[in-house]
Length: 298
Image: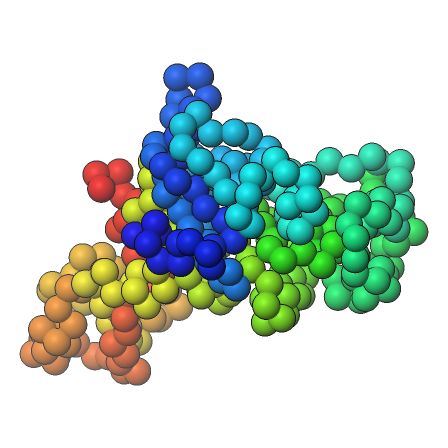
């Protein structure tokens, strides 16, 4: 899977047969992952799948027990390489007494060609926060600051670990637009997220980790095409008793039936004279593919 697509000279980040354990608990078990140059990759997996551990190895924050981690063709521990990347960790801690502009200036000073601070403030809507102490920021404001710091150094590749956690809808959309612009300018993005909507909206490629291994790697269409279920959606007063249905949902008068045979299901709807309207037959979403790939009996 990931070891072939994009491997070699065009890769900006790679994990080759990487294993990592914390005491008796394995986090990664022979993970192979390739991030091609210019990619926008969403790294997905259930809690404890190893997503954050994988990022920590690529960032040089941890070293593998077995296997190899490569970043921009070299070691993630190389200082000259680290100055070419940006990152937003899941949890950030800043000196609470420093002001936002002081934190931004401090981080920017570590890069040879940082983004002008006025441009950064505008992109992330930080202008009104520049004079405030970091300790007085809300959780969402601190997440916004963390995302800005990931881009302040004009990096070639940026790693975003759950960047939208705690953000309201407006700020989340602002972050999406900024990350999209970075990618459109040629930047490489690696994103972990629990919001599958976010992965669908942003990422060109999806990699799914389960139990420390890569179980899927490809475009969203390639991932969802592995799922035979279709969604039959329509308006009705209740969920009808028809088959074949794997599971169903009912919300605000809209019935959604997940089925392996949409043609047969629609025929059954007509034959049983169920009153319905606004019928749609839709392909599987990333959510269905994710659930299928990471179910406990997989």
